Image (cartoon, rainbow, N blue to C red; front, side, top):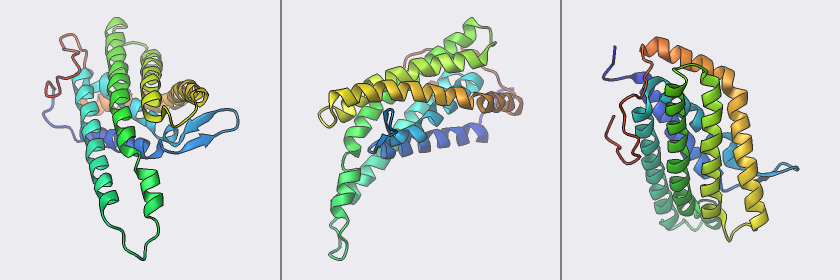
Length: 226
């Protein structure tokens, strides 16, 4: 039975938005793992793709598209208020303004990069997931979860890093980041797959849903078609 309101879906959408906001804030840190260079956002961003997979699998592409756009607009609000906080005059007793601006001042550029990357990467992830579910007749969730993530994360990295860090980091580092992030985020999905599979099974039982997108528009901009 189709439900008009789902607390579980609401919580998934909230977590999706929170993970995206955290990822954008953490992306400003460049991490040296010794054998490769990554960003701080790596520790949280793949969670948004795992949630995206769960939403597409259980609730369908329409709900996933809505969640992706909600995530973007929540990011936009976060950046607006961060920029307002930067603009506020600091108290004379506080000497952290420069560090505050250095860390959070790049958030606007990262938001734009994240917007382009998230829309492209997350939508492609959802699209591949949805189409593969139809083609596989609902079987082999693990395969489509990994394949859709690989497509989505690769596109995400190809879009995000040149926009966010071109001119800031050497080109060689950018290439290293693109390869490392796409690979590691997909590996993250594979490691978390047993948990994801069980979450999907639980959601299908709890929600009594298992949506197949036989009749759906895959146009990205149809935000209110849910």
